[in-house]
Length: 249
Image 1 (spheres, helix red, strand yellow):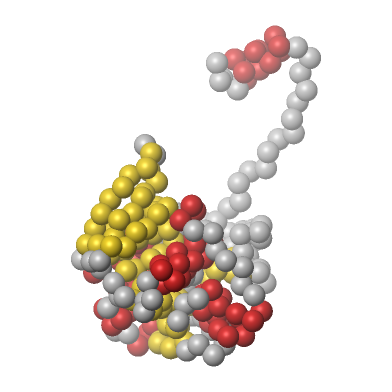
Image 2 (cartoon, one colour):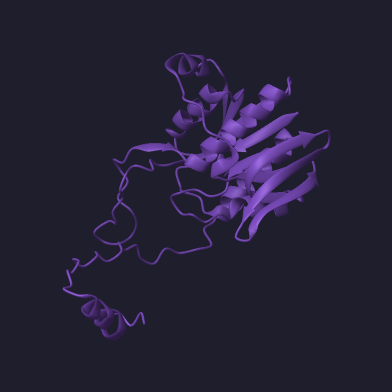
């Protein structure tokens, strides 16, 4: 069995980002970067499947500039067997990402593709569904449990209405939600071992794909700051504010 896991290098979730002065984007030139948290969960889930099914191969793939290899090394340290780095200096939009991953999947022929449910930089949550359509594979998003049984996968999905259990034939695409797995701590010895695992490098520009942007970023602005709180003297004052100023009643 082969599992392909897509990971993305994003600004660390602990970093507070700010808009550039000209509002053309975010100021992340010197920000700390790390693996997208949902992708970490996806890697952990894939490695856990591998541990339960001897002979399974986990392949991590990421798209980005040179330092993206650092993110792939983390995936290798977590237990992935090898990695594929699709080099691209440009930040690809979701449609282009799906096209690149589809090409990699066509070459690798995985039994299961696992992604994070979304990336925390754009929160688009579009790639898993686009990828399944391009590959003509079933897709299950926001998954918090995966069971492999022969040529089928059974998953539990988190929805607004509750939990949904669905079953699909392999190969399939699933996207990881928060409760799918708890990412393991990456130790120094595991990082040293990861340096010996192979990372194949492919240039996105040489894949023969249409990777042109379809969306134009018009402006990036920070949310307005919250006004200071007000201490009221009585319940009657509170009701008056809610009714006549906030219009909440």
